[in-house]
Image (cartoon, helix red, strand yellow):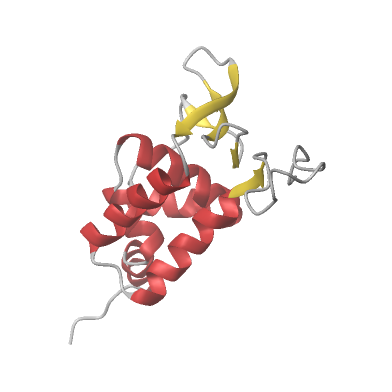
Length: 152
């Protein structure tokens, strides 16, 4: 019988989590947002996860999102971004709206054939990543004198 090194087993188990699978599969904007989502929800585990999924990984390089997302007054999903030159662009537009963000992550989950429990965790982490909604309260009656009040 072949004995498996417990550390190697841990590496395989970590790669097989939804976090490892999505990190490996995501590209472009989705990958950048996913990295920020995982940093927001799993800060302590992110570095070991990146080292397991991408052997030889040393550090994140710019550009990257350095804050959680927010819904702007316009409805865009925005986050602060560190540019290649090291500048911080405040409220950089990431998605046109919540629906575009949901569809982006739904395509990722569908492509990986994530099970229901993994989808729930993924979308819970994405939901927690959006920490503020600066739009007018969509449930408020526009005829109400307080209709200009912000939700957050």
